[in-house]
Picture 1 (cartoon, rainbow, N blue to C red):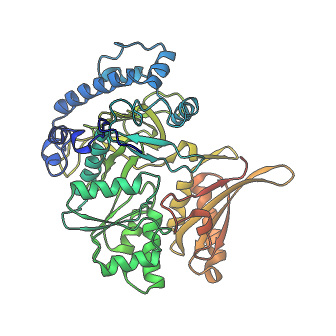
Picture 2: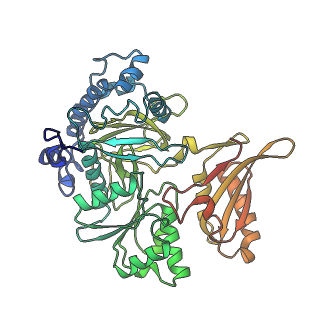
Picture 3: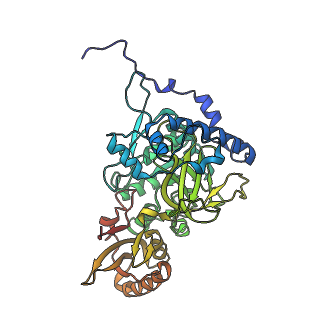
Length: 469
């Protein structure tokens, strides 16, 4: 192949004014001086300006022109953040339609590989648990701000320069592991130790690395943090509390934080982020709710049925509007997660609004004999029982001649021979109280559910199989 000496090769370091970007979206420690305690009036002015820039960018992208046009919206209708409710929301179903209409990447991003003046792009995907993973291209500005937002979370939760950070997030097409690595490496001074999930690095080896390399911080989903500690304690006869870990970073949701902290002897912090929007909210040391990166994202809570916004403190589905993305800006994206907004105010002194825990997903909910059942609520009840290690899996199916909907909750029991029958009776009674409908509990031995949940193999833990679909 001959070389075209006039061919343009983009340079990442030329693609951004990094000093300017860091002034606009300050990483730690500047973040704590510039944004974390910013007066609400000043923050509102920043949001308003960036919101209008985001809407203007939306009009440049075919997906938004089509979606907004269907509702009768015209350029100039949105004059500020007060008008945000006039913008029609969209969901993952609209994104999938965009990809089907314009394969392979859809027309919702506004950027594409190549072209006359190419820019450096990186591709990652959603988890792909319901079909082909959804691709997402990240422009340099998108990627760098995402790194900064994650670094803010890590610094707020106690990560410090020189820490050795074991990240158990999957390394592959999906975004999570690489996003964590880039943020830690570029913006915290800590050292990422990228073991990935148990499929990449066996759990026993991960425990040995934590012990022998002096790991200070462990990042992972709650089920795997719990699994790591139990393997250390029960299989390797090591006490995780002796390892010197001073921070556990997770996406806790409704999981029992206290039990994970007891296993490790270290604080475990909650956070909220998505493949499309990066790290949007995170706990501080006081754990009174997750502080929202309000200079970079607007979060709204809407009634899942009507789409009307609900008051602070009331649960609903999360709408996301990003204030920094060039490629694929999110503008009232209904991500289908259930949470609530909490007012600003925290002993740490932050002026930022807070997000409550993530209670589950609308699309992960199942209807069982008229009741709305979230697997996350089942997990809370299971984790309360000390005779279980917290691992569970739900199977919903139609049984009998009358095709009655039934749910079986399989639960790993530490000593099923001794406690199995009692766990079954107690949890069936407790779950009736928690979810409002009777289910069958099936005690199983430790490790028996791994083929269903993938706990030791992946960071994308599965908790439900609906055989009625």
